[in-house]
Figure 1: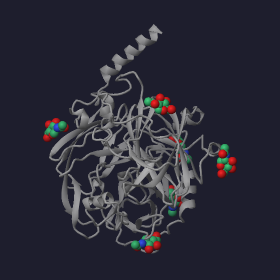
Figure 2: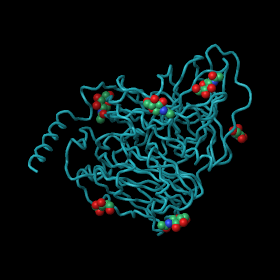
Figure 3: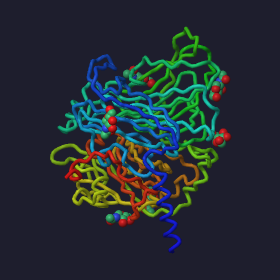
Figure 4: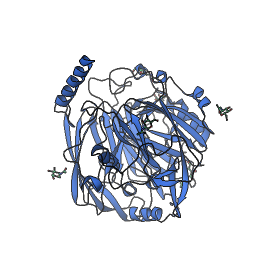
Length: 535
Ligand SMILES: *[C@@H]1O[C@H](CO)[C@@H](O)[C@H](O)[C@H]1NC(C)=O
Ligand SMILES: *[C@@H]1O[C@H](CO)[C@@H](O)[C@H](O)[C@H]1NC(C)=O
Ligand SMILES: *[C@@H]1O[C@H](CO)[C@@H](O)[C@H](O)[C@H]1NC(C)=O
Ligand SMILES: *[C@@H]1O[C@H](CO)[C@@H](O)[C@H](O)[C@H]1NC(C)=O
Ligand SMILES: *[C@@H]1O[C@H](CO)[C@@H](O)[C@H](O)[C@H]1NC(C)=O
Ligand SMILES: *[C@@H]1O[C@H](CO)[C@@H](O)[C@H](O)[C@H]1NC(C)=O
């Protein structure tokens, strides 16, 4: 016992000696993001966009596993602002996560510096504003974490890489869209889809005979997309940092908040080909196109577009086919399959049902009958400074109760290392998509109807992929398993942005009694204080 305590103290000192937000022995990348309004016209209509360093979409961040990425965000907007780094695991604490449950927003005309280490992950991620409806105007971009030179990847090193950011677009100002939601009106259908900011004119040029890595992020506010390239098959190699079995696809469905990387062999005739992202499931179908140009091509793309596949059941079957490559490594040298996730006892089951809710005469969205409202004090700061009256743990039920929805602050409490089964039950007739910050989780089942415990027999307990964002089909459920190994306050949110804005989110507090830099970093010295944390 005494030995164990001494050992813990030793670990604590060791952790204290070598752990701060940024590690001196790993390379640091310093970036400045100037966030400001600027005129753009993605669909030919001039409107006010949110630019980063003058760009729409914002610059692609490219870094290497374990890099320290230090980003000074200068907010030149007229509203408080935050960026969240979607899929960045923020090991040891949610202090830099950039959502209102963890951070005070950056006031207008001030700046704040995020200090993050891209610890133990590689893959295709992205970033976007988490506040208000800012991301409907821009402020988003790609974030790619490359492998360290010593760590192999399970496919031939590509000759080049293309990063594709796909989003849906409205010819309306973000404040107008926000006003529509605030007043309880129906959110309009998007006016178009964009690939890297343009509906049809982005060109990617490659050399015949070479392999390219195509990284695709769906940053749509509402649209699922089907992605395909004329005359080519796509070899899926990664979803959100997880190496998949490398199967070949004619097209792949990518839902809001998800990303995927493909290997593309440029082995066809030298000419141009159409890259297509088309919206799924909702009418009218929107398309964005780009051009895949073989170097030396003088021949524009021609011929039929590859067709969009059928709707939900095709999509659900495809989702089940995506498997983990158990022998491949990800960011660490050990194989992904060395973690036998299917053998770990589940300590808690939570079933979360989404529903629309009329509250105070306005349309809102709820999870287990609670429609989330951000307190003026970030949950993480309330927790850290022991400020009462901001949230109550476990006030939201672990199962849907069917009771009328109320406004509230949902925080599910977990002990560090809990192993949790989370079932998303969707009894609405539209597709849902959920993202969890700070984690990857195993996506073990997608099925129609109502979940109950006997559904566990259909779970994939061998080779389900991990992801950070998962879709739930209409009138269906999705089950995930999460190993709660990252201390902090983590946002679980609908990736369908108007729903998230209207309350379809919650937090997961992962905690243990021992305050130790070995498990969680201390509050950053530049933390902005607000609400009750400021008094
Ligand atoms: C704001 O930016 C300046 C440099 O322009 C930097 O020195 C300062 O540390 C930044 N402040 C914060 C809180 O990040
Ligand atoms: C799985 O990973 C191994 C090890 O990197 C690799 O050799 C193999 O090609 C991969 N298999 C598939 C089907 O992706
Ligand atoms: C091109 O590459 C793909 C993927 O490796 C392969 O399936 C296909 O057969 C190749 N086509 C030709 C014409 O070599
Ligand atoms: C988009 O393409 C699909 C076929 O994939 C077609 O049915 C649809 O009409 C197109 N929509 C527009 C707006 O061009
Ligand atoms: C929240 O619920 C979980 C599971 O029942 C439990 O382990 C935890 O102690 C609860 N926390 C509080 C503060 O009630
Ligand atoms: C679960 O649902 C299925 C299909 O509706 C039903 O056949 C089964 O009896 C249910 N099992 C339990 C334990 O309720």
